[in-house]
Length: 353
Image 1 (cartoon, helix red, strand yellow):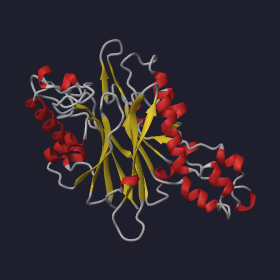
Image 2 (cartoon, rainbow, N blue to C red):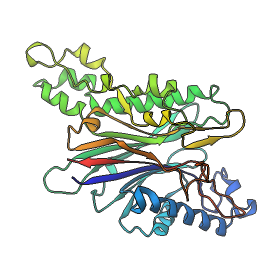
Image 3 (cartoon, rainbow, N blue to C red):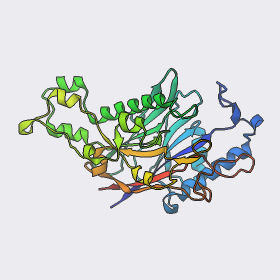
Image 4 (cartoon, rainbow, N blue to C red):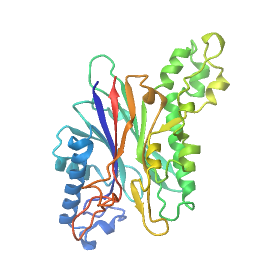
């Protein structure tokens, strides 16, 4: 059966060399050593890593974060030599001007309409990086499978892991509400739709294919992921289909509306491997942390609607040219023009049934 090769990567401050109108990126100007030569080298190095993913065949679907604008994304695609890669992108309200984006192969996917791309701004006391939504459909006759992708970049731990935890909990609740909205009808829809929804209709919505990918700046065991996004390694909750009342009738409004979706975090097996992660924290912890993750809904885990996420295919690309000899990210060096990012890419596969 055909496969979709997916990947996610925090490419680490891919800025152009021109200062923005808000002047929040002055460290990425020629005056601060961010020359055209440095920019070109970083783009080239990033492209070489992207082309090395999936055993040198590259991804069909690639989520990125920390890109400044569509112009730098186009430069990156050009450097890969991949004419089939297309851009789904919306400028976010992030104060630093770093966005999430999604690249997709037009050999497999239809071009999404503008209405099928949304930037969901996460509001703290200020607007931060958005959760970028793209609704994709495979090419083909009839009604090919749909894949809803949410690209995340949650608030950082820069000012302390526990001091900044409430910010990531806010982002987790926001992302969780988005997932619930895809998998369930609203209270108004459920109570007012005539004739009432059938159990089969509720199950069809409950089993939609939703893929969350991103730099969550928390690990699979963190409260934001486990308790607020409700994503874990435990399939006991995930495997439950939408249950009806006696006689195959739809559930009561109370039972339906209070139920939230439990998600499967596909990165859990990686936590059992010593010193395995996607970002290296120096200083007090001096360790690898698993911040970049794939999280999926029930329908995508079990292949209910034409697509099946393959947990066994999940991998961290921890070798050259993305990593050093110890398997740690080879961050970009402005002077030596070597390295690429302070994060490692993650990859996986989805089977088309």
